[in-house]
Length: 89
Image 1: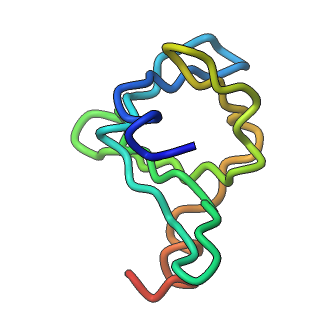
Image 2: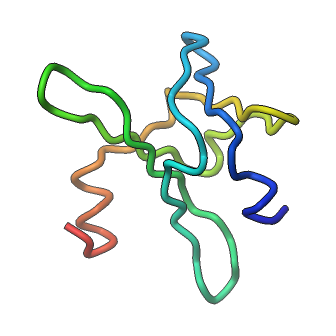
């Protein structure tokens, strides 16, 4: 599947049925040597002034449909630790 096919699809939580965002607003972490997607980094509404970032591993994607992608929030990774591992912090 190409990124252009994913762009514009809504991310929906399987647990809550809540809209998490749109793929065009997210970042994909991709292994440049193999082309494998490791995770989606989704900016999400948090508490008052703090934005929450969700790091969803690829195995957390349950279904890719025509208009939306269903994800399992039970697989969400800790943002700080994940960014340190990628040396992006």
